[in-house]
View 1: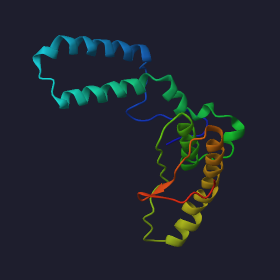
View 2: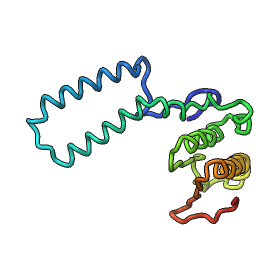
View 3: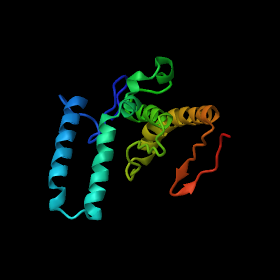
View 4: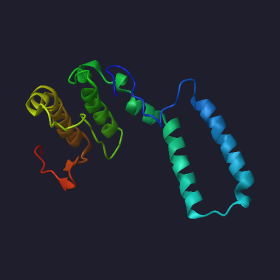
Length: 168
């Protein structure tokens, strides 16, 4: 979960404790050397080729300075970050904006669960809806600003259907 003022890490695509880009590069070179030595011993079928492409993309993400910067919400200006609260959902909204600005084409946010079979009124009125009321306007305001600056439209989708654009 994103935490205010701290870089966000993504399990599986963030470098672990003690692992540097240099160490990862050394491991990648070793893997490439092994692949070169053993390529003649295997059939180059589509499964192996697909796994190699997947591995190359994962390596690119792990070593990408651009990706690390996009996930580092502590780099956001304090005045802009102040528009967002400090709980995980609010910080996820800030992270979503950073990801979109860095070129990510699809971002999904989760506020937790909407399964409210018990105490639905209190769960919605005191927990879930106030968070949405506080953060969604900030996202939409920034959406309009981003579209104006870049000329790239951002489309909102719900259940596979495009939501009519409310702002521009």
